Length: 279
Length: 245
Image (cartoon, rainbow over all chains, first blue to last red; front, side, top):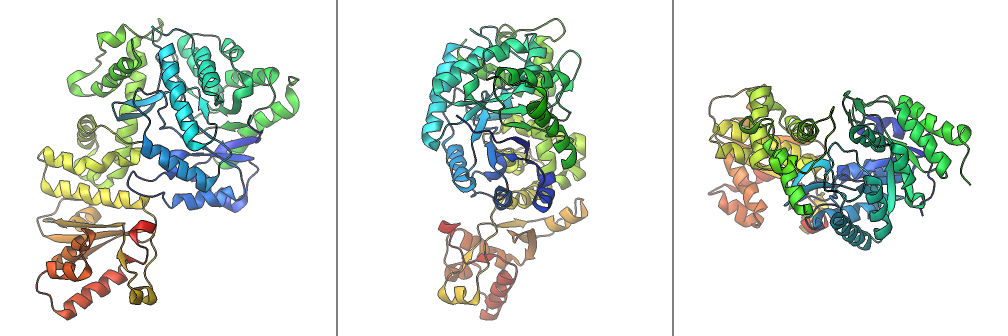
């Protein structure tokens, strides 16, 4: 469903000049969609020119944070139009956003908020994903988010919800293994049972990142190295399925590019050497 | 519970938190519909979201208004921003839009006019960074009539010296100042004569160059020529019609 692009990094302003100057050993980059959409009343900003320069040397995927696919509100037509225009310019390998909601009644929280895992939420989300895919003319990937709150009236667990939504909508999955670890820690479930439910043929991309350990809970801060527990999930994934396009997200206290590439090489080694792959 | 009800009470919870009037509040309706563990309580779980909700938005605005932050001080400015976000919640997909109504909110709150104008000035400096750089007209473009006001031009007419307040990072006594802000690759600002500001505003409102000049009053041809030469040199015009930008 999605080709293997190798091992990538999140594209961050801090590294732009170095990437353009040195063409580092990274297979692809993931750019944040909203950074290139401009304001509501402007055309796309000049930062697109910089992204296009990187696009000349690397495959690019676009990763959004504001689609709010699970909201009870209708989809934001202006956002979709701008997103599509950006896709036409950048020609990304694929595009993704989160299986969550970010706002309601036209108000935006600018956070990835948890959905209740209900049949009603599935129906709402599936309808929206289909609308988006029809509009964009391409399959999108939906990412599982980390969560701190679960609705007590949920009718299934998160992994079942994710699988059901993506199967019904016929979309891809961006599986964030760090988010699975964070949520499993916060809600007390076994992350391996989560992986048991994943329709692997739909998984086009994997996210890795490091959370902040608050003792009683984990917060998905993307400012730490990938934890041992998450690397174990990565290895578990490789035992269950074939190598999947992988990237490391690092959004705060961003280390030098060479250090990030070192973290990425850990994933590369697991794939190249350490793990017996599934047939 | 229906999806829309879940989302409404969840959002309300975020919005009502961190304001002095409703600190550490968790609604009964939400409390009854979320899970908890012994070590991670319902209250603490919602606090993670509430902290992110406020911190992300307030921090974004602190970056957008660096001089107001210096003048008001961090605590007072953060308090102002929390009230602003409460009364003007974000309705856009991008955080970059969040500060668009801050000056209006400050006026609603009867804050000093000089600070409201400074907020407007800082907003324009920020918003114009998102505009594409539009090509300046060549002599040939001008001869052909391909000369338009840039989309990235803003005019601010204030009773206070906003440029000086911005540069000196302090409130200064009243003194009328007309300012034009423009994206020329970098964001630039120019103090102009009041009549020049009237002309730019008139063109911005759709008036022809001739009508815009008339709107500025009885100007000598030499003065008009001087203004337009300044406009050209300052990069207020482009050869690109609005529809193509």
